[in-house]
Image 1 (cartoon, rainbow over the protein chains, first blue to last red):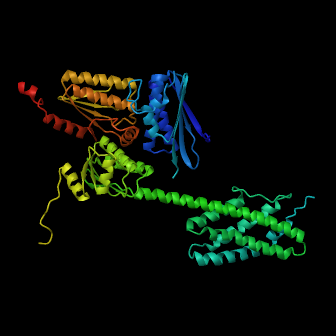
Image 2 (image 1 turned 90 degrees about the vertical axis):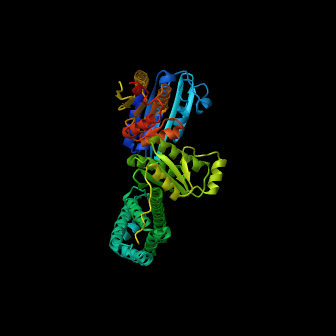
Length: 139
Length: 292
Length: 129
């Protein structure tokens, strides 16, 4: 991944279900501040909600870092969600529609990928990192 | 040895600035006025030329050592050149005609230097090389600025084209029309869906007509984009009537396994309108005509 | 955070006005299902105008609730899905919400009433009155 100039970042710890609401609220706020439209704000908030819920369901404890990496050409909001749970056994399977081990619709991860422009997932026992980004050319 | 080997240029730019400026502008204006009548502001150009020459003099006078002076985009000189060039780009000048500006200055300066330094060839060579070098850089800078501005203009135009090409029309109370025209790519599909959904919510449109007469090709990706728009519209509470699918379109869609279930389809926009009105409990009636 | 459920004859109305935590959502599902059974509701209308984020979990809660309501014999309409929410849901995957939708409570109520009209059991209890 290319390194981008970091303008600002906010970190939200994710320990229980109430943090899901907080994390997506912060994501929406930051996105709005950067200048993303309402549709993109909703995409970002929803994506953060999905990833944060994964942390609560499977990851024990983790955090969500929301990074404004915009420059004068483009708006870029990057989000890193990290947890320290047992990790994802089979990433390929987890990325398939309808696959779930936690009783959800199995739409979380693949759905999030479809909402975002960038999606990178790494997982091993004790550390799962998912980074996503939404990028829009400035008009 | 701290003498500035480029001192003759500095002297020239101090003592003959008015003459150089005037010769330079006469030539530039002669060409530009002919090619772009009405787009040239003579006073402003002369003012810019003076400012540019003053900065150029400063650059050479502050210079010492062997290496030619350097120009960066954020220097005063670079700033003037960029501004001038981006101004040309906005007015629709051709790149070559814009480049003419710096090239003409180079010619004028060269002529003056040759005239004043014809006694000392060593100094002349040094000065000519320095002028060459500096003005070439300036040239590149203006070209960069020109292209940048052009690109920005093009980006803006394509953006407004996208907006223009996706009107959402309120046909009747609670009835919307989305006429799709042209190629639908991902970016356009996204914008179009956003606008459609906003309009549906705003007008509480219980029926939305989507007319695809103007869509040249139906492939999986186009069909999928339209499907998404339809699904989202239905989530808001709007029913969809599709119109204008061509025989080829119908064949392709069926072969692709896309049936547009949950969607009413009518051959023409006319039939679709009748259907939509029926869904909102209205109809168009013959009233006997105006001419009796 | 308890979400109020209003009764209008044998129709239940509920408007979700705040961003729900997972626990709130489950509580709501529980409350609503019990209430349906309690009054033998014929229809329910759930207004989600204020929901700015509907992720796959919330979508499941809504679908499940609707499914449970149907099993209990009630018609279900969701109203007020925000345009960006609809767009996001559709982009995430089709069929995340499989319930009939409409713009506002008003229309939702109208649709529910029309559907109840067509049912065989609509006047059953009144008739025995």
